[in-house]
Image (cartoon, rainbow, N blue to C red; front, side):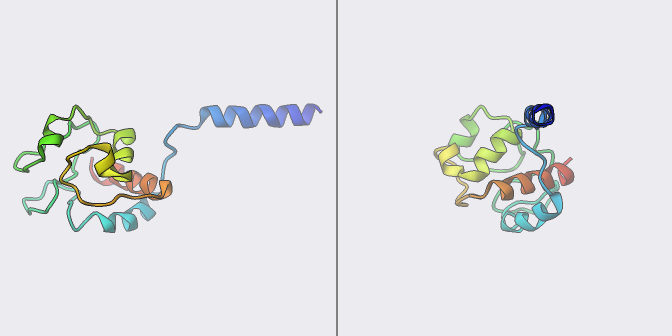
Length: 125
């Protein structure tokens, strides 16, 4: 009985200590990002793509990349890109922000989103 109580306590501690967004696998995330790279760069290159670059995305206000023509909805949105907002946006962009110009359907699998976010955290600093 004591062992069972200890194991239960350890399990509860583990669950409570686990962050809401467990870190993903950036190596796998790089492969998932292949779905994004046709439209987005991860650096501030002068090369133009369909979507804005993602350099320094975390902590950045939406629609703040100079030289990119954002939708009216994105310009009016009061969004700062963090893990939670980015996860919701790449899950279903048009549901997250009605009127966005982004036509990508989204990444349905939570693991894919966690992994691509982990990749972006590494390469967009």
